[in-house]
Structures are given as C-alpha cells and as structure tokens.
Image (cartoon, rainbow, N blue to C red; front, top):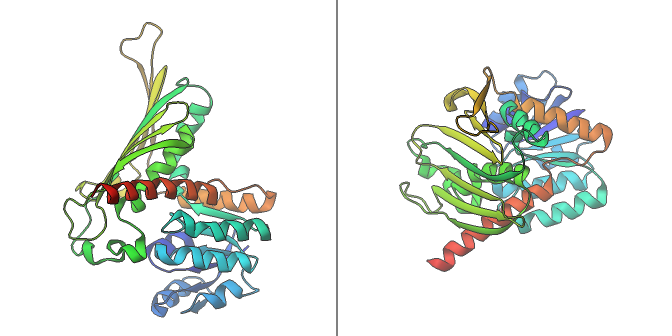
Length: 327
C-alpha cells in the first residue's frame, strides 16, 4: 500500500512512523522544508508544497490527512474523488455539515475513510472494551471521563486558538476523544448538555468543556476536557452493575497507561481488584493503521468512520450553539 501524507507536522510525523504494512511515497506541506525533512527519512519519498498533486497521483493508494481542522474535509474529499482510501485525523472537520459531502463521495466511490480517533486503540481501552463486551462488569450504567493539559507559553497564538482554523477550542481538541470513547462504550446520545467557557487563556475559543450526555436507554456520560489541567491527565471510568473499570495515563507525560478492574462481590463490600499495566511506547497509532489496512483488504467499513465523526461533531455543535444562545 503506497501512502501519501498531507501535513508534515507533529501528527504527520507520528503517522509516518506508524505505517507498518505500507510504504511512504509522497508527503506534502505548505511549509516545504517540513515535507522535505519528513521525506528525507524515507528513501525514494517525494516532497511537495501543495496537496493536490499528491491526492491526484496514480502512485498513491492511501492518503493520510493531518492538517489544521479547516483543511481536513476538503483534502479528504479530493482524495476520495480521486479513488484514494483516506485516514483523516479527528475531528475530520470543524462542523458536522462539512463532513456530509465527504460522506456522500465515499459512498459513491466505494473507497474507505477512517477517522483518526487513535485513543480507541490504546491497549488499556482495548482491554476495557473486551471486558465490557464479555459482560465482566454487567450492564453499563454510566461513564466518567477527564482529559487535559496546561498548554504552553504562547498557546493563545497557535492555530488551535483561531476558530476559523480549528472550529473551536478544547472541546474540539481533546473533548472529541472523550465523546468518541463515551459513544464507543454507551452508544448514541440523544440528550446533550454542556458548557464551553474560556477561563484562563486569552483566546476566542474555549479552554474548558463540561458535558453531560444521555442515551435513549438512560445511560449517562459525564465528561470534562481542560486546557487548564496544568498536570497532564487522562482518566476514563466505566461503571456497570457489578463492577467498574478505570483507565488512567496514556504513556509519556500522561503517566503509565493502566487499567484497574474493580469487581464487586456477591456480598458487596470491598471489591476484588485486578490491575493491568501497559508500559512502553504508545502503540495506538500503529494498531490503528494496521486495522485500516485490514479494513481495505477485507472491505470492512472502518470504525470509527465518518458517521462516528459526524455524531461527535453534532454534539460539539449543540454545546457551542447553546452556549451562544445563553450568552
């Protein structure tokens, strides 16, 4: 599988290192020096300063799109129209409506589009989903998720702080990961409540997001994403009728990835505790890419795909719209 990457920043570099089973043949970035630096690591790879020649090239089978949010749907759409499979980074667009032409094009051409919600492929979350699907903690009740960091000097001047490029702040950045994980465990949400204020950073977008979501069956997700966490944090808890799963850490600055399974006893009281640690490097990017190659080989619809991204962005949009009306 011949891979082209559009967007050669931090995420583009991560994607290039995780294409096991594929071969990087082209990379493009508006900053040509970044494309050249990435291409230099892969002998025979060409570097471009424009994305159109890459998505139109007959030498490319699959396009990875890792640009600012504003450019994601346009580039992905062009790649699909040209018959390329696409891995587009989350959130795949700024608004749900921007995804609809892409969804229609993918359905018409039959090519596959996967959305880069790599958190589903962290081993602790994979193990948690396996336990839930196996009935280890019984029917689910609710989930509680927290995710955040503290930014850095000059964060308010970066592209994420500009709504025309990002579509929003922390809710669109890390918040959509929490939404996607909550949907993965609980299903679709029919009731959305939330706030997306700006507490600290001098920017036009939100630096915190607080969400309360409910499914048609009454299951609830309580989520908080923050750019004022100060100490990097990831915590995701899944509660069932006979147990609880607690996932913490994502490796690196977020701490060792860990899953703790609290299993209630028939007599209740203190639960039995089972701990699974997942030290080492973040393998989620490679696992996700490998899953996409399997999608392509078998013709299986990618999960998460465009419908998942659309559902997450509809929740984001509803929170933002309610916030504007309240102001």
